[in-house]
Amino acid sequence: MPKNDTDIHFVKGITYARWNQNQFVWEVPHYPGNLEKLKAYFGDRITLIEKDEVINLNHVAKPTIEKDEILIIQTQKNRLKLLFAYVPELIKHIKTIPYSIWDTKNKWWTIPYSEQFLGEISQVAKRLGLKITFEKEPPKKQGINKLKPKEAAYYKTCPDTYLNKLQELRYSENTVKSYVPLFEEFINHFPKEDLDSLNDRHVMEFSRFLVTERKVSTSYQNQAINAIKFYFEKVLGGKRKLYFVERPRQEQTLPTVCSEEEIKQILSGIQNIKHKAILSTIYSAGLRISELINLPINAIDSDRMQIYVENAKGNKDRYTILSKKLLELLRGYFKKERPHYWLFEGAGSTKEKPVQYTSRSIQQILKKALSKTKITKHVTVHTLRHSFATHLLENGTDLRYIQSLLGHSNSKATEVYTHITTKGFSQIISPLDKLDI
Image 1 (tube, rainbow, N blue to C red):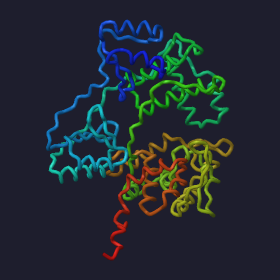
Image 2: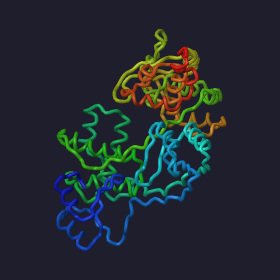
Image 3: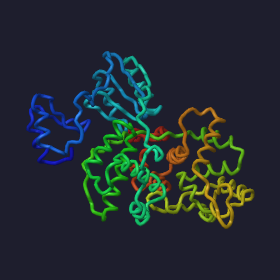
Image 4: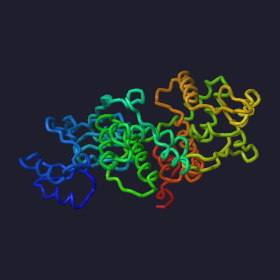
């Protein structure tokens, strides 16, 4: 329910009512008379009552763990779940790992998955004489599919006022592509309701539907709520409004990164000069896939050895580095392809009507390049950007410069790369070693 002092005071007055801080819900025992109290107080604000089915939100099957063992489970959300008896020394080490979380309800620790962290936990466990069992969490049951326009008798499209406000506030093309279908999913979830009649109750019901029925990720749910909030807050007169929808906490994971040798394998196996130039540009300059697609020819400044990235994420401009090897590769590519306006253009591009390259085509280039290597990790085009930042850090580049090259407005977004790399620690000298004792 929405956070309301009067409502909370009423619920607290029910015997044994309690707040579940993990599921963000109030729990009231099903004693005689309690349901009638709730009906009488909340009235038409109640949206759903399940009478024939008991829903246990907190039930998670937990295996029995002996005192001398540790169970490590790799979850579907790319984290490691650690189950073991009370071992202070192991707990102390876990607390040093970034984004470690203690689940008070289920009594287990979770940390981001990485080979480094898995190795650290295994080493500490072995030193403490713990028997290690490693498992992978089975795939979860898929939720129902998203409603498609052809499946609805009267599919409601996004109103012009919504689209116009997105353009007026100069939201990026990617944000528009994300928000519009999400908002359409929301309004079509209530086919019998007019757009003007939708309110907080509908937002909460739709959010619950995304979690329980669609089984979407936390990032999808967050973006859906943002798309809906945009309509109520920006389109409807720009009036600021609060929505008491419990937002899911994003579980922190570490990005996948390729080693320098793996990057070499990927790029060396590409014969097509244009394809090689595309992936080389993304890696050597730390670009997002959308930034590469939107690079005009004049973004390459060979005099200053820089690449100008205009109107990137968050409508920000920035400069990033131009590699000497990339410049040579681009010159060879230019002589062969002769692009008209965009640095990389798609099929059918002409001087009068230049056509941008597509993100789908770039993904296919990487997929084909990976098939020629023995790399088994999940590598995407964005992995090249993560690898760029990590390799700069490993080679001694200051974190502030990396932040500027990536276009991060918040330093915390850049600091994640310090948790990935292990290089450089051997060069750090303890202050004790400099003392003459």
